[in-house]
Length: 401
Ligand SMILES: [Zn+2]
Ligand SMILES: [Zn+2]
View 1 (cartoon, protein in one colour):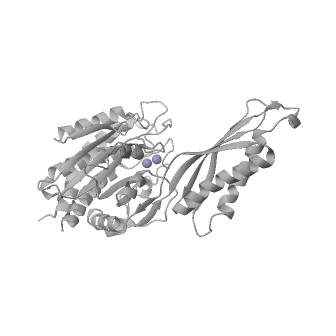
View 2 (cartoon, protein in one colour):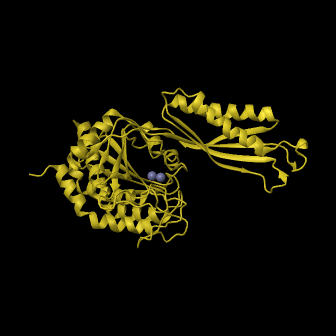
C-alpha cells in the first residue's frame, strides 16, 4: 500500500501540466510588488473554486485561505505556508514563448513558480483533509522583493485568528541541481537592510570651490570610509556586507554639488552585527561630514531580519524531503547573503525555509536570479508541491502526536 507521502508525490507529479500552465501564465503577466492584482485574482478564484473561504487585500494585494482538517477542533494546531507572487523591474531578454508581456517587468526570481506551487499545494491539501490533523493557513504574499510585503500582511493581522505555531516556505534556486533540496537548521539567508544617506553641502561655481562645501567630494570620502566598517569594526569571525549601490550628486560639470544621495544595502546574520552596521554607518558618515563641513541624514527605509530555521522545523522538512526526493538529493550549503522577508514570519512562528534546485541537467545552470535571462527547470514544480504539502501533513501529524 502507498504511504500518504507517496500518494502526494504521485498526485503532485500528475499536476505537472497544470503547474506549468499556471506558471507560464503568471510569467507572461508579471506584476511588481503591491500591484499583483491579476495574479492575486487568479489565486483567489482558484482557492474559492476549491471551496475555501478566501480573504483578499491582506497587505494590499495578498491572499489568504485556510484549509481545515476534517477533524480539526478549536484546539487543533495551525501551520502557515507562504508563497510569494511579485516580479521585478527588469526587462526580460529570455526570448521564451511565454516571456513577459509587460515591458520592464519580469518574473526573474521564480515567484511565478512559487505561486503555481502554492495553488497546487492548496488543491492537494483540500483533497487530503482527512489526513490533516489541524489547519493550514495558506498565504500568498505580495511584494517580497525588498518592499515589505510580509510586514504589510502581518500588520493586517495575517498571524492572528488563529496564530500559526510554525511557518514554512520554499524558494526555487536556479544555481542548484534540479530537485536537490537544501534543508538545514540555523541561518540560511541574511538580514538585508536598505540604507539612505543624504549629504548636504553648499553649492557654488565650479571655479570657486573655496566658497562651497562640495557634496560630491564628501560623498566620495564617505563611500571609502564606509568600507572600513566591515574591515575594522565587525568581528572577523562574523559575516557582514556594506554596499553603496547608488550615488547621485550634482547636475553639470561646472557647478559644485550641494547635495549627494547615497543608497546602499547592508547584510548580516547576527542581530548584534546588524545593529552595529547601522550605528557605524551613521557615525562614520557624521564624522566625515563634520570634518569637511557638511551635514548628513541617515535612514534605514526598509529591511528584514535573517532567515534562521528552527531545528524542529528543519527536522520535519528533512524527513519529508528524504521521502520526496531521496536522501542523496538533500544538501547543505554555506549561508548566503541573499535577503528574504520570509524571515518576518519565521521570527514569529519558527519553522523552515527550504531551497529546491532548478538548474537543468541538460543545459546546466540558468542565468542567476534577478538577471534578464533568468529561467528555471519546470520539473522542480511538482517537487515543490510535494514538499510543502507533505510538510504540512507531517508537521500537523507530529503535533497531534
Ligand atoms: Zn528575488
Ligand atoms: Zn525570491
